[in-house]
Image 1 (cartoon, rainbow, N blue to C red):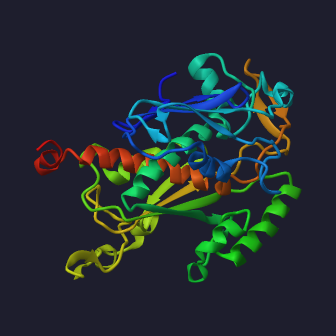
Image 2: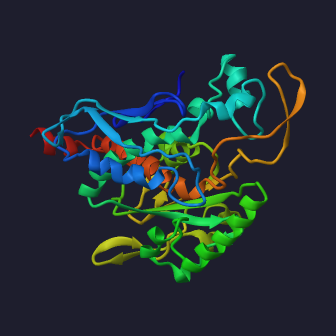
Length: 365
């Protein structure tokens, strides 16, 4: 199966299935001498693991990570880092009724058409559980970036038609509610909405924002590997993401040039922008401003309502999905978005290190 490896220098390869024995990731290209422990990675994995609230799947997984290689005496060695997380609470019998029919909104049909065979146990590689490897790798990338003064702030922006009020934005509130929303009033309204959705045996869409601060100007490769284009690909590769926006995003279609352009000025002797409609990129290259990424997630396709579908032998039928499923994807995907942003940014920064002769001279002279 092609397509399970991402990156150029800082490269990650995820592996494993939702109901297989384990999942994990191999990280290649990580610099040596980075202090790294299983606890560093576990902090990230704990943010996405299931069963932490009434609004996530009841699948009980500790998501305990083990480092198998690439770390010695608490520091990375520069060799491939292999990480593994064992599955502990699979209930494959819940998926017996979908072995020969396709779940609406899922990857079942596409996998059968492509491979002529699929792992129907929880969706196999198409399951949201695949993101375990992404998050583990993102924890490593984020730690490297933190040492360079780059930091991430990620949260749920909206659940259904409930959108956070930025005038009530409180960073400390993000971890105080099960939705990871920085607005307590919005979180309370989201709780009420989700209770209605669950009572109706349905699901709802959501959006996640990630703000990256401290990124120096000049990162990103013009043309095909632009910073925003690379972030777009990384985020769109997350299951259930249907749209990605940078900065003002889709609002630019209604703006005038005089409104959308970010005026330059000098602050403390350095170039700066009066506004940040561009979301921190110009011409696909970072401009020194905060990078703003927004991802829109479709409703969880596994709902308990009866649905119309077809079998693998192309006969019409109805399906009632069983098992344990999240009524919403966004909150548990907050850290996944952050992880993919970290992996992408670190990779582009490592590539950028070779863009100037003086950079090489600092290393080798």
